[in-house]
Each structure stands twice: as C-alpha cells, then as structure tokens.
Image 1: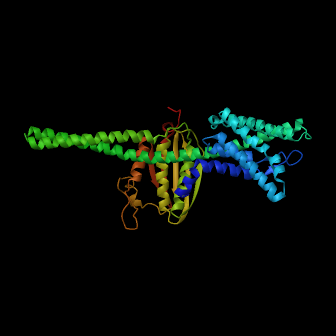
Image 2 (image 1 turned 90 degrees about the vertical axis):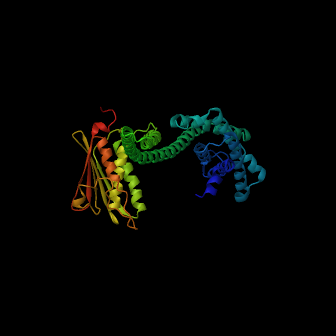
Image 3 (image 1 turned 135 degrees about the vertical axis):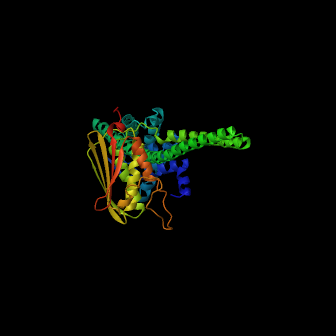
Length: 422
C-alpha cells in the first residue's frame, strides 16, 4: 500500500463512510424470518460491529446515525431502481432500520463496550444484549406501523438466538484478528530481541577490551611518572581518562540494550514455540534467497522457557548458515530430545559441508568460508558468538560431518533454560 492510500484510509471521515457503505451493502445479504419483507436479519449488523471494533471511530453515535441513514437510503434506492417500488412506500418500509443502528450505538456508548475489547466473553454478552434491544426496538416500530402483524413468542426467541449467533460470531472473528496481530508483533519483538542480544555480546566484549586498554594506559602513566617523564605521563593519563569516558558511554548503551533484549510481555514461550518460530522465519529467508528447502522437525520434549532470546539467537544463526550452505534445494532437519536432563539440539542440513581441516577453527572469531560476488569475506563472527552463548548457558556445541552436509549438535542443561527449575 502506497503512502497516499494509507493516509487516505486513516482519515476519520473516510473510515466512517466506509463503515456506512459496507454495512449498507452487506445488509442486503439477508434472511427474512417473519411474514413479508419488512423485518430482515442481514449481514449488516455483523459488518457494522466488526468494523467499529477493528478501528473505533471517534464518535460512535455519529457513526451509527450516518450508517443508519445510509442503510435506509440504500434500501430505498434499491426498491425504486430494481423493484419499481413507490418512493413513499419505500420510505415507510425501510426507515425503522435507522432505529436499529441508532439504538445500537447509544447502547454501545452507554455500556462502554470499547473497554471490553480484550475480554471476548463479556464483549460477546454485551453485543448480544445490544442487538436484542436494537432489533426489538425496530420490530416494535414495525408492529406499530402495521397493526395487522402479531408479536409472538417465536419472534422474540428468534431475535435472541440470532443475536447470540451473530454477536459471538463477530467477537470470534475479531479475537482471531487481534490474536494474529498480537502474535505477529510478539514474533517481531522476539526477532529484534534476538538480534540485539547478539549485539550486546559484541558490546560486552568491547567493554572488556576497553577496560583492559584503560588499565594498560594507567599503568603506562604510572611508569612514566616514576621515570619523571612528566609530559608523556600527563598525555598517558589524559588518554586513560578519555578511554574511561568511552567506557561509561558504552555501559549506558549496554544497559539500554539489555532492557530491550528481554521482551516486556506476559507471553509464555515454550520450547516448541521457539523451534516453530525458527523454522517459519528461516523458511521466509530461504524463499528470499530463491532456494527450495524442506524443513522437518522431530521434537519429543516441550516446556516453558526462561532463555528464549539466547536460544533463538543460537538456533537462528545455525539455521541461517545451513540455508546459505545449500546451493539450490535441500533439506534441514531439527531434532530436539531430552538426554537425561540435557536438551540435545541437532540441526542437520544437506549443504556443501565443512572441510575436515576447518573443524578445529570454525568457532574462532574471523573464520569464514563465505565470500560475496566481489570476493570480499564475511565477518565470520557468527559461530564464535553462538559458542559464547552456548557456553554462557553451561552447554556444549560440536560439529559432525556426515556423508552429505553438516550436523550441529548443541547440548544445554535443561535446568538452565526451563522455567521453574532450579
């Protein structure tokens, strides 16, 4: 969607008009349970409630009035145009529909329904109550207009049942949309946290390096002072002070990144969730590289995690490497098992594999076998940091060389990643 159309859809006036138009059109998809054409159950109320829940207008009352008028005018126009109806008869026949939307939005405002959008059951109950009252009001007005009609128990029973079905149907659709969006945001947050987590490791290593440089610089100052080299000593002290300032700035950045790397959410992550997320994300990555890769998961263990970010950083990095090692098409197998209190992750690919002479150095910083089209080497720091994260979790990582491809084996004590286990 281009910026112009996005801005257009964000307009409050346009949104209200869209609600009114879509409601009017969908109201013509209808069921007529009572005698005659006068009272109908259409999709209009479903569309109306769903749209105002998806994006609540600034004035619900105004939106209901505009929608009610639009529905009535649309029906009058349809009767005259397609059924050769008389104008005044069409007005009398259809104007009670306005009452439905007016009563509905008044109740919506009065009952503060917008405060219950995260409580599906209560929202469904209130939506059903509002529809019963609004439909009853419309039905009574139509009865007063045509005394020859009767109001029987079956009519009210039908109103209640339709209200029940339509209201919870809408709430179900809305909840599915919201849950999907929330999950998408959480997945994005988890990915961002994983990326930032790795960056904090770089920053932490840099801080340790800065600390060592600062200590060496101060030792140099003391030695120069003992040798009565005053000018050189002052310069060494100044350098030490500047390095200290850099360290303090790095510490502030590190503290900020550390707060971001753990998502501020009550969402519970299980081991199976993380594995599934890795497969989904890397499936998209393989598609981006125009590679046809089959992912298979064999997992017989699951539990709630405390270290979802470090674990995601490990699995994502190795899986991305596996994708890059596969030329055009291939297969990646995830195997997760519990080996007497140790969680074993095996990630096997059908890529080009790792040369035997490189096995002892693949985890060293700077090692790489990847070069771009210009022949420039990659940074080669991914696996070294994977190893650091695994070691931080008191785990082990090693590589096996099958006939085809590579197998990465990661062993992590279950107690170090499972929630509620000391």
